[in-house]
Every structure is written in structure tokens, then in C-alpha cells.
Amino acid sequence: VPTFCGCCGALRPRYKRLVDNIFPEDPEDGLVKANMEKLTFYALSAPEKLDRIGAYLSERLSRDVARHRYGYVCIAMEALDQLLMACHCQSINLFVESFLKMVRKLLESDKPNLQILGTNSFVKFANIEEDTPSYHRSYDFFVSRFSEMCHSSYEDPDIRTNIRMAGIRGLQGVVRKTVNDELQANIWDPQHMDKIVPSLLFNLQSGEPFDGPPASEKEKESPVELTERCFRELLGRAAYGNIKNAVNPVLTHLDNHCLWEGKTFAVRCFKIIMYSIQSQHSHLVIQQLLGHLDANSKNSATVRAGIVEVLLEAAAIAASGSVGPTVLEVFNTLLRQLRLSVDYELTGTYDGSTNIGTKIIKAHEERQLQEAVIRTIGSFANTLPTYQRSEVMLFILGKIPGLHPTLPPSGSGPDGTRMIQVMLLKSLVQVTAGYETTNMLTAMPSSFLEPLLSLSLTEDPEVRLLVLQILLSLIDRHDNRPKFSNVSIISDISVLKLKVDKCSRQDNLFMKKHGQQLYRHIYLGCKEQSSGREHYQTLFTLLALLSVELANEEVVVDLIRLSLALQVSTSFIIYYITYYLRGSRVLLCHHFRWVLHLKGACITVWETY
Image (cartoon, rainbow, N blue to C red; front, side, top):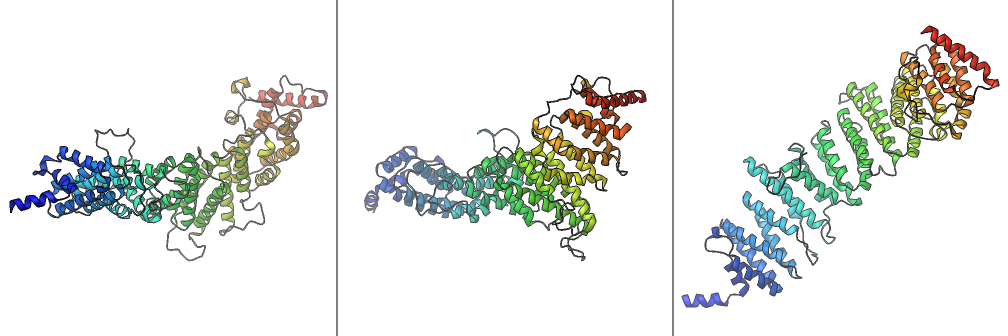
């Protein structure tokens, strides 16, 4: 009998004998390295046998798993890893099928150690660049299984962390293996992204943000750091057509887990997204956030405010890239949300009816939302070039009720109209802040200036003040405005260090066309009985800026006339104009009588002080 068995053993295929020889009698001794080298040499010499080697190793591993001989299981996987690293031939595909079958067997086990072992082998395989394409390979199981591991609820916290980290590394491996392989199932399909992205966000949410340096190989990598790195890698590989499928699961996850209200995690997620994707794709994320804001128009103010805050952060990051060709769409959405919020605040319901809605609307939350929208409008405007900002200014002005009869009235009556006016003017203040232009004709065309000035004569003092602030922002091109913040008479005006340039031809044309209109509205504004101290301070600053930024000989004379008409209330402006005239050739005969009036007014000022 022994002789007969020996003969049968000798008759076994050589590849089986070589495979059997790599397993020691005691599995604790590990892989027999000398015999492994022989098996590798044989596989390289006879690549047509590689698929049989893989099938036989798979058979042995399945048997060892069933018999709980986990030491031999580890040896089999180590052998598979070495063969994969060594062999790159046309027959590798069949061997890979056997390898993936064995990995799947380990991942299906309820033993954490086997799951982690299978994951580690899969990650090594994912880093291998294959020479030949595969037409029939599927990774659907691995996406599902690794996603499940990311949500592990194992009792032991250390083991649970190890399983989750293995799941994250597995997903990272799937992405690396499939993202650039056109023959594979598209990993960007919603059926895959809806599993991968929420799994990463679940682990990202479970820890604090990682702000330190990357962990070295000797240090233990934290789950949050690993998750963030994997998420960034996934987004960094996303092409133009895949951004939507990658971002949609993020929006859904934040909705399902009520994470907009806290804002911190939502902002963190979208900062990762905006910094990871290619900068030219930034506007796609912005558009998705705007669409999501519209979809949540009747949700609570805290949810809408959270989305707006995320938009604010995303816009700041997108400034280095692009906010896309549909700029007015961005502002149209934000202004629509602003109008809706005002209506909600005044009516107390989301549908405009008199019935009490199922959701309680809190006025202070709506106010917070409105302020967030206004800040976001300003943030978007800061990312735009000058010509686009001018278009946005006209666009916002065209939305103000009361200026255009074609605009629909507010559903909440006169109070709603007044509040919308205030909110839109506050938005204009944000858009014009820091506005830089060398040509006042393009900055304030008639289509913009005339409606704006008409608002400066309304009965509402807040509206008038906002209009004046907008005019100050547009006229102040050298940042002189802060230097006129205090109304006072100083002995040496040079200490203000005013920045003054020669008035350009375009500026002269602007003042010739619109100067009288400006003077008239300034004069009438000073006569408003409801104006307060801040109104007069702003009017004085406006006059001072006109004398510094846009004054030529004719303008100076007109400003003197206006100042004298306003008399003592604006006498400090006469002082500034006096300084401006010092050394000027404007002291001509036909101006002489106004200079005498100027001198007398200045003497009056000095005697008063």
C-alpha cells in the first residue's frame, strides 16, 4: 500500500506538488520560502499553468477555512500575493479570478482576522498594474462588502476600528483598480457611489478633524485621517461628468442625518470636496448646492441656513477656479431664497395661506438665514471680475420691488415690500464693497444710477442710508472713505494722507452727465426730517469723496454752491474743498465771487470752533 500511494503521489501534476510543498507541517513555521521560489519560477516558466495553480490554491484555502486551519489560510494568501506580484502575463486574468474568489471567501467569513487578511491581499492586488485588460471581472461584491465593513458594529472597539479601517482601505483599492479601466463597470455609477461615499462620510463623522502632519509608516494611522485621504483621492480622480454622482450622495447623507443644522461637519465635507476636485470643476459643485437649496425651500430655516453657509465657504474656495458661466443663476437663486425667507417671516407659513403650517417658523432663524444669504452674495461677488460684478449690480437692482411696475408685489404686503427692499440693498452693499473701477460711466450707468437715486428719497430712513453706502462704495476708488469717518476741522489736512489722482476724461463726462442729479439728491437728502446722525455723516462723507475723486474746476464750483446752500451743516466740506483748491488754477475771474463766499464760510467755521 505505501508503494502504491507513493506512485500516485509521483503521478500528481507538478504544479500541485509545488503548491503542496510550500505548506509546512506546522503552520506556525510560515511559508517555505525555498519551495515558494520554485513555484514562482515554475509559474513564470509555464504561464499557461498559472490558472491551474490559482484554482488549486483556492481549493486548498476553501478547505482550510472550512476546517478552521487559519494558519494555512494565511500561508495560501501570502503565496497568492507573491505570485501576483511576480507574474504579468496574458494568462494572469484566469489566475486573478481564482485570487478574487479566495479573497471573497475570506471577506464572507465572520472572523475579523480573515476579513482583514482578505482586505490586505485585495489592496496589494489593487496596486498592481496589469498588462492585459479584463472583460468579465466584476467588483460589485467588493464594493458592497467593504462598505459593510466600514459600518462595522463589532463589540470590541479595537477590533471594530480595525474592521472599519480595512473597509476603507478596501474601497480605496476598488477605486484605484477600476477608475481608469474603461472595461470595468463604471465605479462612478450611482449604485456604487451611493455605497462608497456614505461609508466614507460615516467614518469621517465619527472622529475629530485631522489637522496634524501625515502619519509615518511606523505610526498608527487614525481612521479619520485614512478616511479623509481616501475621500480626497476619490474626488481627485473624478472627471467632469462624474462630479454630480460623487456629490449627490454627500447631499443625501447630510439630509438623512440632519447634519446641515450643525453646519460644522457639512462645511468640513465641502471644504474637502472643493480642495480635492479639479479647480475648473468647482462651479459644478456650486450648482448642485444651489439646486439643493431650491429643493429645500420649504424646509426649516436652520437647514437652509446650513446650506447657505456651505455655499459661502465653497464660493471662497472656488475663487481660485471658476464659478461657472451661469453667474446670474447663482444670484437669482440666492435672491429668490431671500425673498421667500422674508415672506415666511411675515406670513408665518410656507405656503402663503392663513392656515397654520405644520412647521413652526421662527422669525429669528429666518433673520439668521437672511444674513447668511447676504454674506454669501458678497462672497460670490468677490470672486467675479469687474465687468461681471457690474452685471450683478444691475441684476439685483432690477429685483427691488417698487422700482419697476412689472415686478410682482410681495405676498406679505407693504411690510414685505419694504423688507425685501432692505435685504436687496444690503446685498448690493455687499456686492459693491471693494468694487474697483477706473471708469465711473461703466460703474454707474444711467440704468443703475437713476433707480438707485430714486430710492434715496424714500420715506424709509434705512433704505436711504443703504443707498448712500452703495454710492460711497462705488465712488471711493482709493480707499479714502475711512479718513472721513470723523467730522472735524483739522489744521493740516495732509495728515489724512489722501490718495488723489487727476480726474480722467471719463470722470469728467460722468459728472457732466450725472453731477446735477447727484447734487439735487444730496441736497434733498439733507432736508429729510427722518434722517439721523448717521445719515448726515454719510452725506458729508459722500461730498468729501466727490471733491477728492471726481472734482474738476466745474465740479468744485458746483460743490461750493451746494455747500453754501447747506450752510453750517456741511461747512467742514468747504474746508476740504479749500484745501483741494489750494495752488489750483481755478482761481479765475469768473470763479472769483465763489472763492470770496468760500473764504467767508471758512472764517465762520474757524470762529465757531
